[in-house]
Length: 279
Image (cartoon, rainbow, N blue to C red; front, side):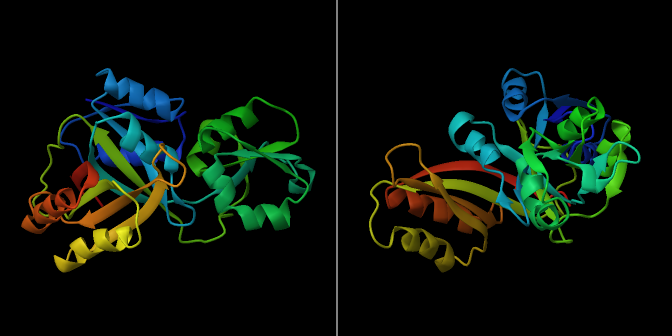
């Protein structure tokens, strides 16, 4: 079995992929890929069985690129999810002084999650975005300029860097949710796991109370929503889709009834997946 993840080696997504593979009944080959587009292309061309993608962070919210792929660019479903606590470290070359650092590299989410530390401890440093925290560590490892990266411990070890400062995220209880995308459901002992269903919903004609009408359907059926947010619909300016996560899976009569009613009220609907929570 082949599992792809957002690389390079040492990324937080690699840890999530390792956690996922540990739950499988047989060994899996983990494959790092340089970007989200490459991960999705690989699974679309049957080069992977599953892909592990970052989806949401407890500090900075949704990873929009992942959800935009799932909504607009693929029909591959989410088949599972898991969460990981995320610790950020300032990493660089041995004996490097923080006061001498002039550039900090990392994924934009990691930079945002460490905003207060950067403001107070590295006001002199320019921030540069990379495709992942591990890529930031890799770039620092081959560069002798006064630069550092925000990355995880595993990335520092992988690329031979020292930890210059630990736990620099603004909020210590920092957690990232990862989704697993695949062509077929997971073959696990799922009976004891909780399920979620993820939806993308767009009203055909925007009018006052449109969002209320959608939420009312779920409330009337006592379906708890664990997430709701809007994203541009990529049509006319002002058109939005609503991304909704619900408790319960598609085996729930309440969920089936809610989806039927959403269709009856002329809402455009895409089910992004009905899947187990693997934590």
